Length: 283
Image 1 (spheres, rainbow, N blue to C red):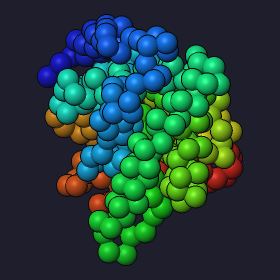
Image 2: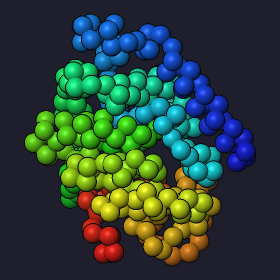
Image 3: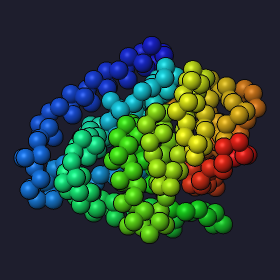
Image 4: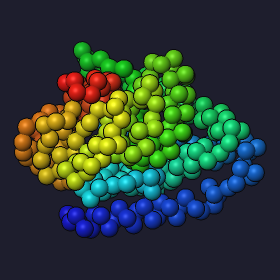
């Protein structure tokens, strides 16, 4: 098993590699070169959104968007087998390339990007709705897309809000946009478009200043140390064993040691899919 220093070093190396891929051709093209290309030509070919049994329909961003804590860097999703494959890494880089061009572009460039993204967003909406067919009997929730389960979409807040608006428009507001984030850019996310879950851990309490008023605070309970003053505690579960919970608090059922199928749907938990109550009220 990797020690904490080794895991931190591994994440730093991954961020450097992702930045190098980002700078490589053919992704690094000027707007003069690619706006007239057919819609089937990269970077808009393939699937912009992904889908997995655990995350559902989701979107990944490159690791250079992250500002990790010492604890979350060591146990990041990015270290998981499937999330570390070349295809997953490149998809994150492409996602970041598009987001960055939207963030820096003018009106023409932004309209062009949203036009090219439209088919991808429609596909993601259809997939999110289709997921509901597999829900356990008696369990109901709204369809949802999880944004940036790897990387940080709030690094690009203009693009994030535009993509969420497109999702709402296509679905007639029937598909929700949910995000877990540790990034200060969360303060720029439109609360009418987002279900925001802001993640803290015991070494990042100062980031409470970054939590939007509309957000739910959740907690990464590394080494089993749970927090009583958050909506839910996630027992760190990307290593070979689970830590025994210490303290009092609400534990995510999908991260409990005894849980066999670690998905929200299997655990019949819809916390991620619901809007938080007003700050100060019970979550």
